[in-house]
Length: 140
Image 1: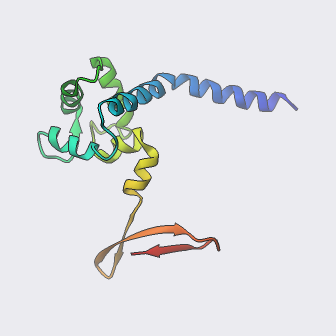
Image 2: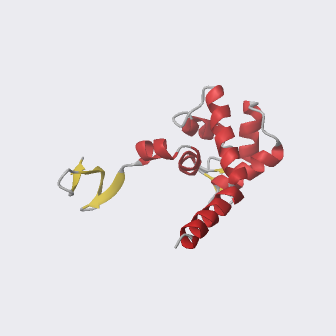
């Protein structure tokens, strides 16, 4: 009976251990940004400053410039690995939402947790919340 739980735990440990470099890189990035006074709410402005082609996304070269000019101590191979970790869809560019969602998942839910709904052709922003009765309530 004990073999199955041990195998499950062992497998999960192996998965996490395999991702340890990415986990440590993300943790280090959050720490370095915080040390210089940058948090999730400052990221959109940083992206605007370094989005040289006004695409609302940053490619690898723009991302390298961003982190190198911030002088927060990343080697080029760390920057490339961080970019690959954030660019989950492998599209070759990242936007502020991808960056914040990867580095600051709790704040991402706070910053971008609103759902856009279409009502009669007009867009309305609705905030979904769970009521004690188990129903979802919408506030506009």
